[in-house]
Length: 107
Image 1: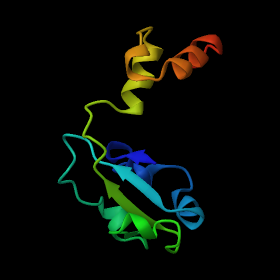
Image 2 (image 1 turned 90 degrees about the vertical axis):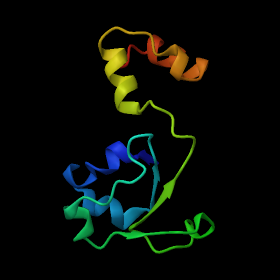
Image 3 (image 1 turned 120 degrees about the vertical axis):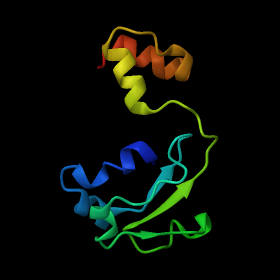
């Protein structure tokens, strides 16, 4: 599961083609990305869109399903940046997750 902001950069990830041989992606739309199309590098690849979430587990690997999960204006990238700059990300995370991040001094 990745946000549309990360999906737009997916073709820049290390070994992204191999990732697509292992799974299908669920791509979460963001408020400013609902109408974004595939980056050219992905459009030229073998990745394909899955339109029915019921077939995600049985569809051949290498697909993606776009999901509107509420269009929250926050992303994991933003949360990581907030934490790295010494900010409090507790309001964006479940309490147990925020506690774990603090205890383990992650980021």
